[in-house]
Length: 188
View 1: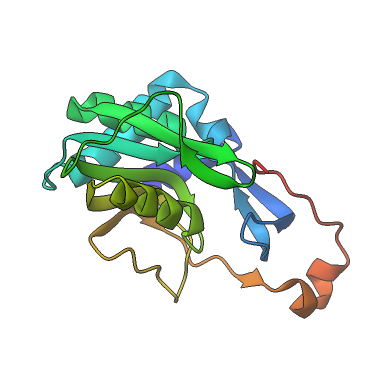
View 2: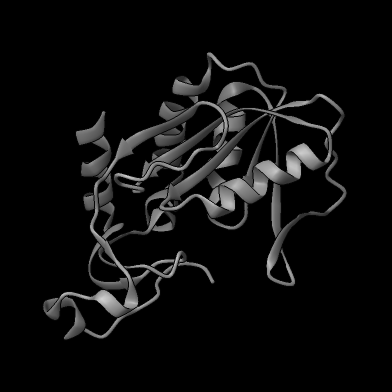
């Protein structure tokens, strides 16, 4: 499946090469733009169906995701699992539960996201679920690019593919990367 997924990233133009600033603030030579991959409903259903298959063993009542990148993933995983999907979104720079979405006490959730580097938005989502009395059964992502330092979400962490993509602090760029203007292609 890893090769099938990489082929889909390349075929859709969702795997970019250049100089990118990630949401985490780190710099990278590669960028996975899942929105480009997931804009095709048939591909979104296939890829998120693979993720759902890897998450079926975990007991859940609902699926939750951080907006914006996780919304399509959450909707498709929820559909494949036959569960409702809700999302958290930014308000004044931090994620919050809005739009009348409710989390019942002891409701079990699977948190899903498109890409994880450091896992900050996933952790914020987990914190929101727990603050509302919910339980997180597992975390699932399409792409784990965290490398050697895996995020610890306090439970099972499932990814379709792991990529050890080099990342660099802004003040420690290699010369070849420093010569290329940086772009920030993801959501802000």
